[in-house]
Amino acid sequence: MLPVLVVHGGAGTIPKDRVEMSCAGVRAAARAGYAVLQRGRSMDAVVEAVTHMENNPAFNAGCGSVLNVKGEVEMDAIVMDGKTLASGAVSAVRNIANPAQLARLVMDKTSHLCLTAEGANQFARAMGVPEVPGESLITDYARMRWQLNLAPGANPVECQMGKMGTVGAVAVDADGNVACATSTGGILNKMEGRVGDTACIGCGGYADNRAGAVSPTGHGEAIMKVTLARLILFHMEQGLSSAEGSDLGLATMKERVGGALGGVVTVDPQGGWAARFTTNQMVWAAAQGDTLHYGLRPDEVLTQSLAPE
Ligand code: GLY
Image (tube, rainbow, N blue to C red; front, side):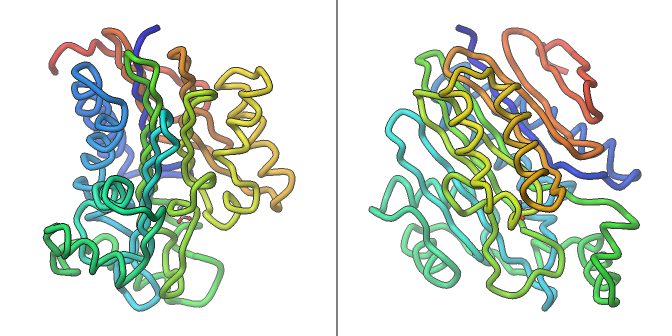
């Protein structure tokens, strides 16, 4: 069994001028996470990879998050450990540079699965996690999109300019332990206090050593209606491969939730992996053995050596 780490940087049509930085960003995150995976645990590796993308303004997570209707950043994140089914999440959290790390602290240091809004921030203070100015998480690009999207209509910015993506990672380590992490700023111009799939166990992530691990991306309300991550693992428990289970889960969401599209990265405990999506594009990368696989369009799989760039 070869350990593997797979990351995504969001599904949808990525704005043309951001394709290159998004592709480079997932490749760098996969390399960073895989370096950790080679030394140790899948949980450490997925948090490392997601932290890397939260720190990259190319993505809709951490610095670079999309803005809510008031022009503020509120973020959701989740982690899950497939060995123990331990999980931690934060929702509608503000002023935190790396929400996935805070979700991990919820998992490690509390008896709860999810802390929300000001309660999550109070917990962060108690844990000594530094709070950052809200402004430091807002890029000029995110502010420009928020302003344009205040115009009436059905999300004119994403229709005309394309989407910025939620980020996520799944991995299996040499001991066969699987883990997932997902982090997002949510959806553009969302209501204040809106909680999406990313903070909800079984929706925006799930990991179980008996089946595998999944991190989805797409419209949170649609993902939640079919509990997408858990649905895909159910199909894998019935004998489908990671790719087959992912495709079936995404097809079910499309059929049952008004044509909703999305994407996932998935691993199984034997080192099988998949990056599947029903959108035009999903930026993803997978590191296994000495090869980095990556792609953007359906059925596109490019490779490069994992030797240092
Ligand atoms: N999937 C991210 C969100 O809808 O919040």
